[in-house]
Amino acid sequence: MIVLGTIELRGFAKLYHVFKEKGLGFPEYYEVNDGITGKQLIQDLGLRPEDVEAIMVNGCVFNMKNLIKPGDRVAILPPGTPGPYRVILGIVNQEKE
Image 1 (cartoon, rainbow, N blue to C red):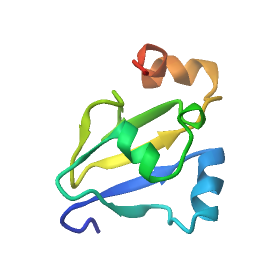
Image 2: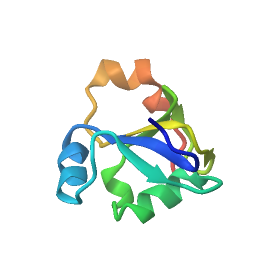
Image 3: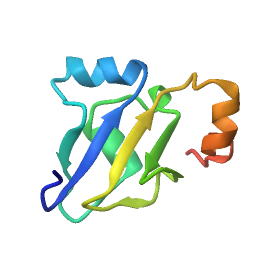
């Protein structure tokens, strides 16, 4: 259950193991107060930008500059998502900094 001011956060593939090493659950309910950008979230989690291929928010690939708001469901995907899924999920067209 999402608590006011939090997001439901999951790391997939190798990031699942990174999250587990950091003591984060699956899902993790992560405090974001009024919101956080994808870029800020990655920094706050101590992830390197090159370890993140895409962030999905509520089932859609999300621009790293956009605001993730309380109540959102967030998935962080590492590089290496298989080819066809990259197109289906919209990762191919994701804008990165």
